[in-house]
Length: 137
Ligand SMILES: O=c1ccn([C@H]2C[C@H](O)[C@@H](CO)O2)c(=O)[nH]1
Ligand SMILES: [Zn+2]
Image 1: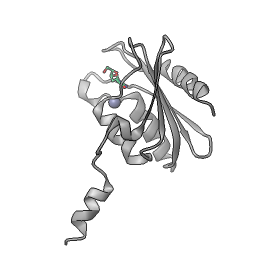
Image 2 (image 1 turned 90 degrees about the horizontal axis):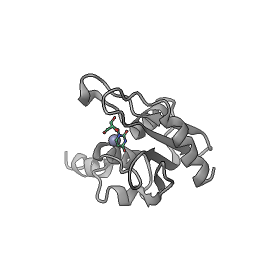
Image 3 (image 1 turned 135 degrees about the horizontal axis):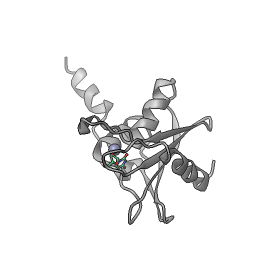
Image 4 (image 1 turned 90 degrees about the vertical axis):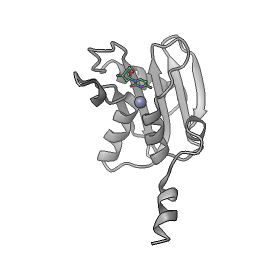
């Protein structure tokens, strides 16, 4: 699927956002290596910290269906420039994707920043960090 199509899927996903508190809907579209697309929206809660972002919703949907290999991610919000994923989402993205995987950050005006997983979170903590300590036990 093309970049433009994936960004359009993210816009469709954004329509499902549950955002009574921030009124800031975000959409994500995650495509796996078979070409299946997982939509994600932000889902808020009256206990604010229980909120789940659009990006993590998309990943958790896919992973809970047994899918863990991905090709690209698109995220959209009504921001001045391309929307910027939060730190928690960057860590979750890094868990499941190659550093070189493309991430398309966009907004409703159509600004697009094409970045990569590695650029979003350079030096991410990873399973390799855990394995180093395991080897010493
Ligand atoms: O990349 C982002 C940034 C923010 N949010 C959500 C979290 C919260 O519901 C609202 C305001 O932070 O936007 C996302 O879903 N993704
Ligand atoms: Zn987030």
